[in-house]
Image (cartoon, rainbow, N blue to C red):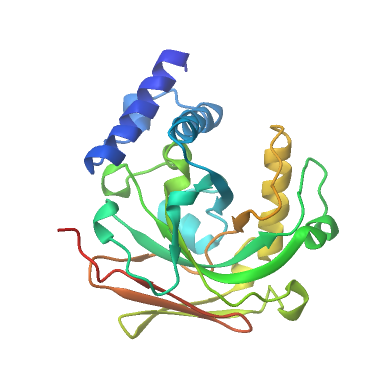
Amino acid sequence: MDPGSAEKAAAELLTAYDTGEAIRPLTRTFPDLSLEDAYGIQRIQVDRWLRDGAVIKGHKVGLTSAAMQRQLGVDQPDYGHLVDSMFHTDSAPIDAGRFLQPRIEPEIAFVLGRPLAGPGVTAAQAIAAVDFLLPSLEIIDSRIADWKITLTDTIADNASSGGVVLGTRPTRLDAVDLVTAGCLLHRNGELVQTGAGGAVLGSPLNALVWLANTLGALGVTLEAGHVVLPGSITAAVDVAAGDIVTATFAGLGSVTADFRQVTA
């Protein structure tokens, strides 16, 4: 893909944020879109946000569970950037109108206490870099109409990032078995999904290692204080204005996303 086409694709996605109107899949408009092209388009958008005053507060790993890969028809993980405006307070009202077609996922969030730079990061090094864990809900969203996405579509669209709600009870990494830790996901009081940490590449820690090494090969370091979302324990659930979603994790506590606020 030539630079002009990459800029055009990024502009289409940025316009979707501004107008609230989803666009057709980029892979239809740009049939030769590669993974490298898609990450380049993602970076163009992130650079625009940074110029406008945004601050990178972490990264997300997506498509790490078999459930999510089946749901979206892809076969490998991806990553996206988390900026300050994406973070929401546990149980505080969230304006559902800021999203186009939101879904929600329960995740065990890592908060780093020291930088983590690949390539060559081992599981032991990743463990040493984690300060604590938090229960979290990721709000995924797509600027692509009807979620008709391929892997390259979602990568270009910042890995379908929308927002994140972090719980308020930090837990030491060694106090939780990341593989067996279970999760119950309730929407409006109804149990809608269950899962365990092992659904995420065998362990959420594997997603952190993958991210550190993937970004490290690009010269990017995961910074101290950054949040890393390793991927969803369950399939994503649709949400809309009026919904309340709570994820309860064994050993980690709970976190709630409140979408009762509606845009005037």
